Amino acid sequence: MKNAVLLLNLLFLSLILFTNCNNSLNKTETPAIKEDPQEVNIGEWYILENGSFNKIDNLLELISREMVPWTVQERVSDFTVFNDYAIAAVNGFGISIIKNNDSTEFEYLYNKDMYQYNTITRMYPVNNSVLCHFYFNSVLNIIDRAGSYNTMQYFLSEIPGPVDIPFKKSNPDWEIVSIIPALNDCFYLEWKHIENNIVNFRYSKFFLNLKTEELITREEYRSQYEFKDYRTLELEKGVEQITEFIIQNREIPGSIHFLYKTIKPPFLLKFSRIGSPDNNVTEIKIVKENSSYFALLSDQNEIITITSGNIINTYALPELPEDFFYMDFIAANGYFIISWEEIDFFNVGASGILIIDNQI
Image (tube, rainbow, N blue to C red; front, side):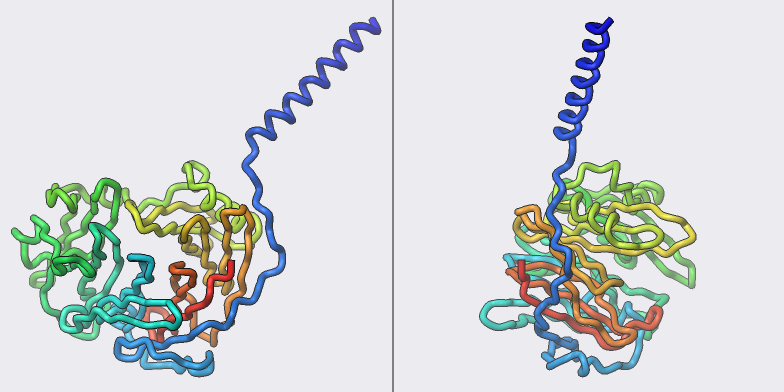
């Protein structure tokens, strides 16, 4: 009987050791966390004035401006990285290259005749150039109609200019109002046409390099908008770790929509933490530079980073005046470039950027 009890004890101990060993093998590596948020260097503040980024000394110079709809106000509507430099899409003007070397310089590639009163949505670094999309928002505008343009344009290429799209050729009065990138040089396009106050939509799948296109259903197009549950995806290790850290360590009610922006197709990975439908949705952007990942928590004035050494840092951004908000950011050439705006519902007043040294 004693031998039987001893045998059972040994078997039980072996089971515990095996279980612990197996759990340790399957456990995701937990990053080290620096508890206290670090104050970032004050950095350089710039305000947009007639398309130019003009330097200001401090936050006290963020003076309120006339409010107009965000669709037509001069503001940074998107960031990307090209040849290691940050590129800013400036609504109503075009794009600007932000060069951070010994000092900050701006190179403006503007076409006000084309972009004024139009809304720039996104940029994509493709084919050794930057592809930019814009459109005329007829609902939120201050004029009846802008000029008719091909609303996908190449910048910084050997041959800048419009993208040749079959549907546009045969339907010159139709306009691309939304664009969703996918893999294999594929872009999902939403087309809009207004005539006699009648609005029509069409949807297509356009292959950029092949210059071929096929019409698709609205349902297929809308399916590209879906935010997948983050637990069902195989995320890059750094993206997974920074996502888990935010979910576990920040009290954010409702759902969280994460937008991981990259400079390679599909350019944008969308995933979410689903919360109560009664609560608001918080949007958090994630970017990568070299082997480090960064997340901007606009509502908390905070940047969270995770390095290749598996260490998480948190950085407290300067508090903005009332009705001013951090909107978007990019990490490039050793710097963070963060856009800010003065907001009143769908109207925007003053806008600009903050440039700070990436301290990791």
